[in-house]
Image 1 (cartoon, helix red, strand yellow):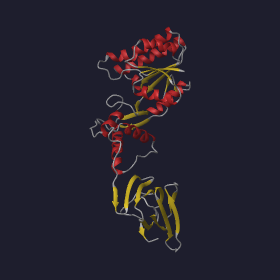
Image 2: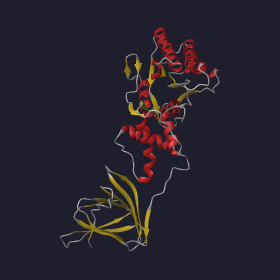
Image 3: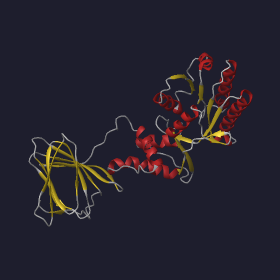
Image 4: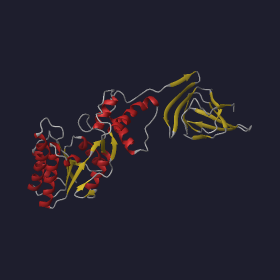
Length: 369
């Protein structure tokens, strides 16, 4: 299948072409504002489906709205008719097509041209009035406020929140791509005469700013956002795509002494804490028990011996562990336990606890195994 994508270097276009390739659609005719106009005639002869994504939303002059959002659409459809091409056409419009402003009027005019084309030719058209989109490869100060907030907050730049209570209707780029692939396969989501991306989110501008700021702070707190919330998950992925290229990494606080080190990696109120423990050869760590706190140990390098004793018993239980065979050992409550480095190199253990450490209530009682 030959697929024509106009606006191929834009936010949606770049994401769409990448995903089409993932889906095995590799015959893509990409058309951009820098392309030779003669190519559009060639492409409209050979294409089997059209994604018409090209448009203007931030011109230098208002007259460019009609030229970019109506003129190119008319040219595209005229060429399809001239070449007797029955390919379905998908166009990206905007929820602002309902507004009486230059941009909205231009998007509405583009819709009308496409619907008239459908009446004249009986060819399938898919018109999507998209809300505010966000996701990777979007442009700050151009595509969406999400991109601007992510870009600026990641760089310690100011953001502007004029009306914190302003409601935003957001749609994630991956959800757009899923819907567009459905349309390509002849199964679009219909709402009256229009097509729609079925997954959208509402959030207030002030809440959006606070949430994205929390992503930056999460590094300092060794925390991760609530990934059970779909919008938070998608916004966090978007935020990470805006990190400066020299700031992908960040340091953790290593608590080191002659025995080795203990470093907290992640903390979550819902899922507990993950840490990395390094023990030097011959070193024993632990020798304590918990009422409610429970843990999982995973040795990833070196050789260790995990020892247990129920605090009211003399029986000692031993588990030999090694990075050669990854094996999780549960640490039950009521058992004093220790881990001994019995190898010749550092013993590296990933430790998970069901709750974050609270110095006011550590639930840790030292008793020799």
